[in-house]
Image 1 (cartoon, rainbow, N blue to C red):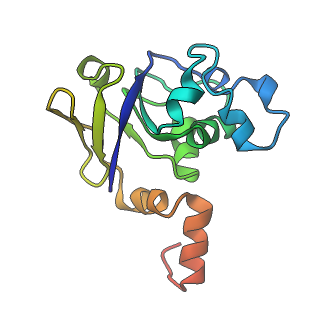
Image 2 (spheres, rainbow, N blue to C red):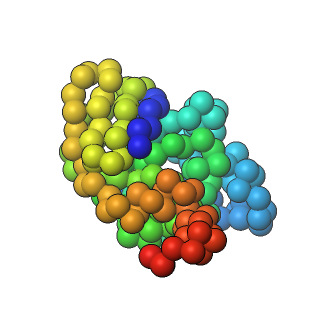
Image 3 (cartoon, one colour):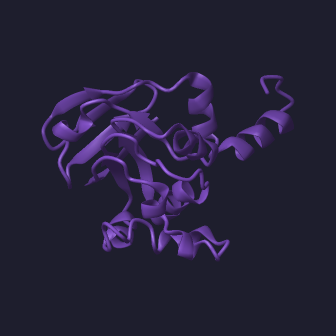
Length: 169
C-alpha cells in the first residue's frame, strides 16, 4: 500500500487538545472538527490538508486526553498518514480504529523538511523522501493492522470479516 503526499511538520508533544480543541466538540460532525484541526499551532492547516498531506512529527504525538475525535479531525481534514518519532499509545490505536495510517520512524524529523514530498510504503515500513532521495525505515505495522487500515477502519473491517463469513475475528 503506497501513500504519497506533501509533508506538514510539527514538533514534540502535540496533544489532542492541539489537534482538535475541545470547544469544537459540541458538534458531532467530523467535517466540522476538520475545519479547526491544529488551529492553535497552524491556522493554515485545514487549507494545506485539503490537498492531502502527510504529517511528520516528533515524539509523543497525540498525547493528552484519549479523545477519538483527534485522529478523525485529521483524517477528515485530508491527512493521508501520520509519521512520528513516537505516539501516545491511545492516539495510535484510535488512528488505526478509524483507518488513518500511522507509523513510528525514529529520526524522521531530522530527515524530512516541511513541504518535502514523501512516498510511504506501509507494507514495507519504508518511507522515501522524494525531495532528497533518501529512504527512511519505520516500524512496519503487523499484517492484521494493515488489513484494518486497508478496509477503512475497525468497524469496516469487522463488517467485511463477519459479512464474508471469515473466522479471523
